[in-house]
Image (tube, rainbow over all chains, first blue to last red; front, side):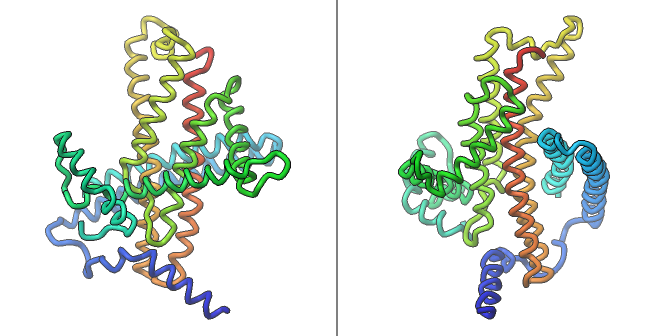
Length: 102
Length: 243
């Protein structure tokens, strides 16, 4: 039984990742200056890191609020999800921009 | 096209020539006349078919005395959306539940379809979330106008007349930014999820990517929730009594 489960896991992974086979071997495509890779890495890192700081503050405040008043859970959760979504969307804007510009 | 999913091929076999003919009549020349329907549209068609089948199955087994498991599932979803809508919109929230549920089910199934081998998320293509976002935009403005009539413009000019030109500009930009943010949030989340799974697959091809598939499942659910929630929030703002 266990053998079969491992087999199925492997088959599932291989099926999902069909496009991975299409990936060309080798690193960055030729004809692109090295500064692009540097800029993309720095930009994405900055965006993700700063958003991480912001989201950490949100999550910390939510934990504090829930500890003070567990009864207010629905309203707090609503504010949590919407706040996180707006912070996260800034990172995603960066991500999409980097993807378009490279 | 070199690579297309098997369902896209089926759809193209059935509808491809007719679609190409219609597009040519409209003056649009598809890039691949042999297969004008791309993966995202084919997956959308699949999602719609699945949803119709699902709701037919639910409708056929509706019962007050002995609710089936499907009915329970739908009632849980409906109760959840209704509870959120009551908190966000307030009075007369019932009118907006059908739209929120429809968009929610469509996006949820679209997101989850990407986890099934041999299919991909239509929402990982920017046009599909854009369609949902534009529909939401039109819907809440329609209800704002229906609810407030000619007084709807007051939401845009603000309380002070002298500042009205500035406020109108800011409001117009912020309403258009809602379309952008709804679209990009959904699209980029689904796209980035696939990308991360791919990246880890190329590092460690066994077991590890499954963790990221699990993460992707969570993201799919959360993004559906966010989209429905924001739709309700925008509706609530559009139909609110005082601004």
